[in-house]
Length: 379
Image 1 (cartoon, rainbow, N blue to C red):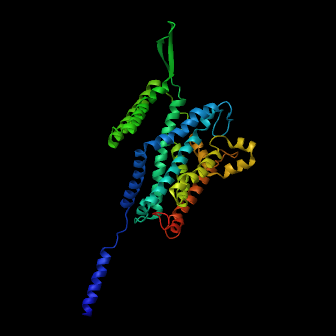
Image 2: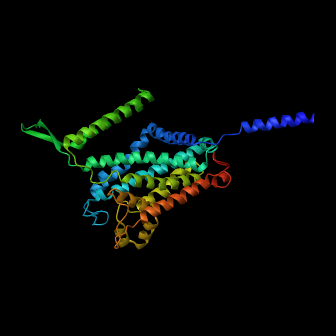
Image 3: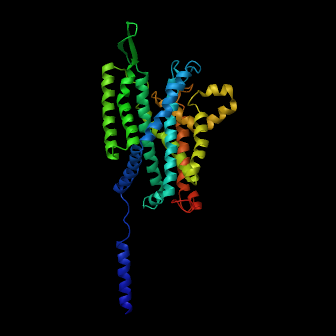
């Protein structure tokens, strides 16, 4: 009888060994990474208002504020500029940083929402390492932000390009013939305007299904890309004045830093209702106390204390990293001919620090989440 018990126990142990979870391979990590990133992209595509709102803010600054401040806020010759530039050219890196900043905070909002609905608990209890899951979600948010940034840069390219002006003749009331002149850039807005009108009509009448509106979005995107290509060839536009290829690594690094900060903040915010106050306390000081809208030497002339605050602001180094990358540079040249890599080092340092703090904070046994009863909700 004792022998039977021993044999049964050995069989049970063998069954446990056979049922033990197998180690996750590279394909498993890739499938998890692709699923998390694609979820963020799909959420972005389904939330069309988020896309338009992300572009409205920088475009308002570009078309209205920058045009109005052109004569007031002239920019001297400072690296990476080799000559005097218009104010709207100077603020482009800051507006790209604005897109990354607001998208990072939007990702923080989604993290708080997922935690309240329980989706965060489902994610964090998977067999994959928590650091890998949070980094995958962070990369998904940065991918969405990079798409928005390149759409803004494309708009700026056609806005600053030498596009001809067209005129439509008409008969005036006094019998003379006059003409209505309009810039050629308006022709590029026909397809987006039609899609926006369709979106507003469907929001008011609910005439079309979600699948039909998704197909309309893809069709409008393809038509707009075709229009942009034809316009570039027809108008024989020169390449962009800025390097849109070398800026990609800077966009990714700056997005990772801002996303890491927002990821850490999402662990601090207890409820969704507190999000607006905390974000306003973070977003606006980071944006305005930086070099996004004005050079730091102007800030130092007006307020040395504000200048030191801007130097401590991580968003300043993200904007400057993007600014130099738009001109194919990593940083300014020092007097001895070497490169000043302060912007790169600071962005990497802040990224590692806040990402590590976020991973620790989302640890149910150690971090801030543990004090609220786990990642699925507040305790």
